[in-house]
Amino acid sequence: MTAGDHAVRREIADWPDRLEAACEGTRFDASRVRVVTTCDSTQDLARTLGCGAVVTTGRQVAGRGRLGRRWADDSGLGIAVSLAVEPTDSTRLSLAAGLAAVEAVVEVRPAAAARVGLKFPNDLVDRASGRKLAGVLVESDADAAIIGIGINVETRDWPEELGAIALADLVAGDAPARIEVLETLVPRLDEVLDRPLDDLAARFRSRHAPTGGRVEVETPTGLLRGALLDLDPLGELDIRDVDGTRHRPLAARARIVSWTPPGPGA
Ligand code: BTN
Image (cartoon, rainbow, N blue to C red):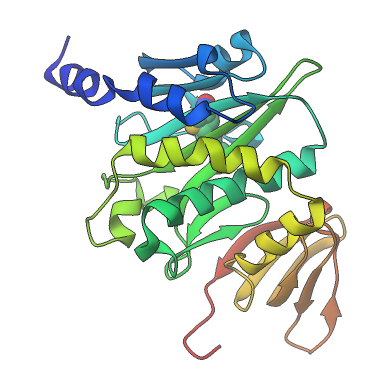
C-alpha cells in the first residue's frame, strides 16, 4: 500500500458514519451506504445494492462519463458518488442531479455562488472560464436509476483538452473537505427529486451559465451559432444568429458543443 493509499484511508475513516447520518429522513438508506478506499466505478457497486444506496470512494480509477466517455479523475482529489433511486422520468432525474450538485457546492462554499453555474443538460461549469467543474451520469434500468456525480474538488494538473477546473480554484484555495460536500448533497438531492418539474426547470434556468453568451449548438437540422438568449430545459433554446434571425431548437434534441461566457456588461 502506498503513502497515498494511507492518506486516503485516513481521510475517509469517518465518511460512513457521516453519510449514514446524512441519509436520515431521506429516501436514502443508511444500511446501503458504502465507502470504499478505491474502486473502478461507484456506479457498479450502487447498482448491486439497489434503490437507496449511496456509494462513494476515496479514489475511483475507471469512472464513466456521459456519451461513452471516461470520467478522467483517478487522483483521489475529487468526489465520485453514486446514488440509487426509483427509476422515473429521465428528464427529472437529469435536472435534479445537476441542480442538487450545484446547490450543495454553493451551500458548502457560498463564495463559489457567483462562479458556479450549470450547462445543459447537467454539467457544472465555471461561469468565468467556461471550464467544467463537475459532471452527472444517470444510468437506468427497470429496477433503479443510478445517479453518478463527479466533482473536481482540489486542483490538479488537468490535461488542457479536458477544459477542467476545480472548486479550489473558484474559492481561492479554500476547498471544502470532500465529505462536507457529500453529506450536503445527499439531503439536497432528496429534496430536489420531490419538486414539481416546473420548479426544477426554473431553478435550472436561473443557473444556466451559457445563457447570455455565444454558443455553438448541434441540432438535428445542423449546427447553429449565435447568442443564447434563453434555455428552457423542458422546452426550447432561443438563439439569435449574426443576421438577427431567431432559432428555437428543442432542448431535448440539442447539444451545446461550445460556448463563450457572457462578457462584462453583456
Ligand atoms: C460526465 O460529465 O460525462 C459525467 C461524469 C460522471 C462521473 C461520475 S463519478 C461517480 C460516478 N461513477 C462513474 O463511473 N461515473 C459517475
